[in-house]
Length: 112
Image 1 (cartoon, rainbow, N blue to C red):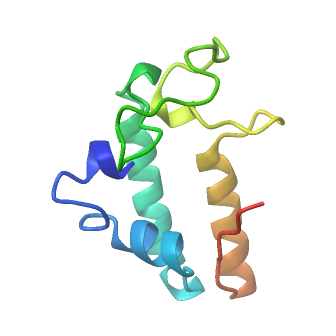
Image 2: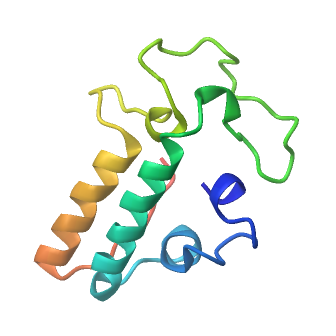
């Protein structure tokens, strides 16, 4: 997201997502603003084909471990990361944000 959409640098345009959520947590109070940003990002990434995937922003020579062998249903960077159940990263995050707002709970990302 940042490489293609934040020309000013990481977290300069999408502060809540790229700094707060990515590095710490996203407060439920900020979910509405962050969700609007997420939807904007998804719309913008629809314009980038899957060949523009950036695997490591610090080393642009790195490629995904699967190389170019990807599901033919992947047509853009907006749906490049899709779960086994077919839901995209953006769909999963929107649901999480809706739940966080409804339950008034913060969102933290975990590596599993």
